[in-house]
Image (cartoon, rainbow, N blue to C red; front, side, top):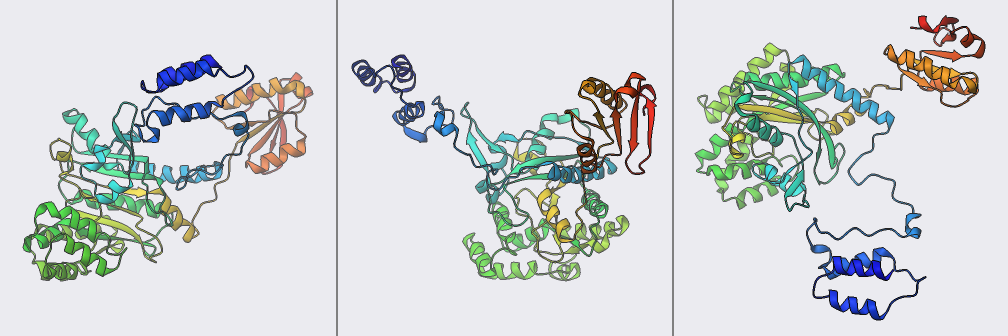
Length: 493
């Protein structure tokens, strides 16, 4: 015991306290049967080294549990805002992700992925104040500032810069990845979620945004969502830019103003005016700005801004392309849509629940100047993010969640415990032919086996009996029809 304390004192305490405690240990050696809980020694060492305020890479080990503490029950719930995925939820997640991936494939996109852990600076460069406040960030043991990704687009930009001229444009990439934000939770909003992103790099024309919206509409149609359930609000950041330029608002204030305006449906209008006032915009400019943001017609916007600007031209082209793609009934103009992320530069859009019960289902837009923020060359780009949590809530609302029970083609069961090896041979033969097999690993009565077959939606039951196996055969029962027959193992399909 004395040696253990000596080691901890010499390795974990500051040089000023080390001699004092070593003398104390020498004088006050405890009896042989006396033990000091290691967690208390570690706690004392931590406190002596400056308490819990040091770097996360500190050499102080976490407290060890005593035997009594080992037997205490832990909280079996996942951390607040996160989820477990038991089999029934995992089936739904796989069903949803398969639709994400299949739609991406139909549109000719290639799948990519990025680390969940990125450098913190990647998300501080041009993300927006809201995300800065919601980052799960910390310092690692190498004293590097890192963060769990709150979204995927900055990681995409980093990868595009890294690949440089080794890839040919345009790039059509998609990803389905887990994201983390420490935020207030509401229905469909969690602190971790999975996000489907589709991005086009290298196309400056509005045809890119038009195709992205078309891909989301295709996804909705595949899962039973219609234009009466969901719509897209469409606008352009250039509308706001033209208006702010008119009132002499500098470009460096543009991102901050967008973040404030993005809250229009979330906080009272007086609060919006107050926050805009803090930016230095005049009262006249604020009133004019809010008047324009209330416009829901492209014609009305053209009357205010005139028809010569890029914003009007881009939006007109998008609505024209929507007709060609066949989703005109899904989209509508709404000048208040600006998106909270600071890097958007042109057309922006949001998918919304027409009944207004849920937050934005998805959103995206053009971000032509994002790459230069990270030291790369600016390349025209646009994309969208689509979270998994809100769409599941919408499917529940519409009673459109699929019934996804477990499905197994075969249950293989030995009728005698001495035939377990033979049953394993049968299961292996079927699996080699690409069939799913649930092998009964214990001696179970047939009643239990039939209940198991019903629970996993098995197509047939393969029974390995002594007499049949001596003949190189097995008994097969087709569960849907009740038909039963014997077949040689070599002929079993």
